[in-house]
Image (cartoon, rainbow, N blue to C red; front, side, top):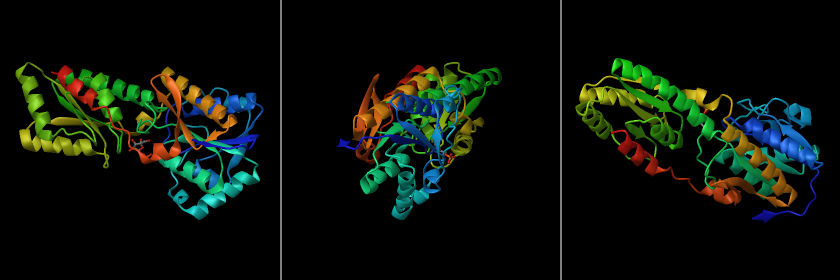
Length: 329
Ligand code: F6P
């Protein structure tokens, strides 16, 4: 694990990548713990975009009022493919130095952490990461900030769909977020009683889904819900509905939940996780640790080197999908 000697006086905090409910709670924890430890805290707006464009402002205790319950991020966020270029990172580092910022807390996903790791490697700017993404796909942390809220938002929608599916004896395909990740799909699939769950890393097929729906009908089922992660192409649920229609003649209604899963007030679990992680990030910097992410192992907070976080892939919990299949018979 990397360490540094310099005594820090000013830290910067930013959110980067897709927003996630609970990011505000993490910002609040960083600012309030930082100020309590006599640090000056600066907000960097729109993630790496603001770092490169010098959109950096001091944050005060009162700027954090009434944000713990708000979704989104008061610092705004963005995706910055430009930050892959070394000369762009150098410009960002110069801006940070011009404000006297000694260290950073990055709240985001693995792309954001790759940028953070590069800033440490190239410019020796100490950084600690807080995993914030609804996808829960960050290696080294059981849970990410925003995942619990997104699962509950999607589940609420699925429960409503179940009401209408049951009333009309219909088959529904509900598409949840997750470009490369099936965590939301597997969790809402189990919690929502889905008949079949499609994930980017799963091995189910249209044929298996049709067989399960037909078996259910024989046993007296009159409605079914399939869950799919969006995968590389949002709208995948329509392709699945087409394939099911062509192969079985069954009609399926499609519901794509989309970006509503990214918004909304964070659950208690996300607020607590974000608050603990934000506080631990500042604490780690004050103890001279950097180039790490704060993760969870069960209830425990852990420190994981960014190099490990960004190079390894977190595997989905396939046992949840197997259990959902058994329980939805
Ligand atoms: O934040 C993660 C995520 O929601 C993925 O699940 C999704 O595929 C992607 O972001 C969509 O991102 P955007 O539409 O904001 O580019």
